[in-house]
Image 1 (tube, rainbow, N blue to C red):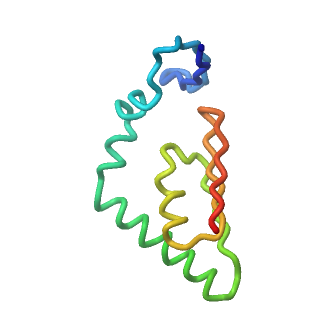
Image 2 (image 1 turned 120 degrees about the vertical axis):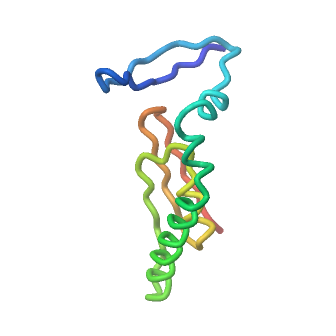
Length: 106
């Protein structure tokens, strides 16, 4: 099975579509990318979680459902933080890989 992958050209900023063979490992590509630095930045991630938790809590304290839209989700880390913080629903959208993930919370 072949995989179609969109990659941003760092020089032009445009997305180029490449066809990868069946041995293509998408997860390793993410691990090698700049996402790894952000995922391992503990101080940054704690601050993001605190901010997300505060925002979700404010909405829920008003008696409303907390619905989160994460545009440019990348690895989905902030979406997972939102759900962990109590969001009722989270839309995680990443256009560069043409993936739409919807994470319902029961």
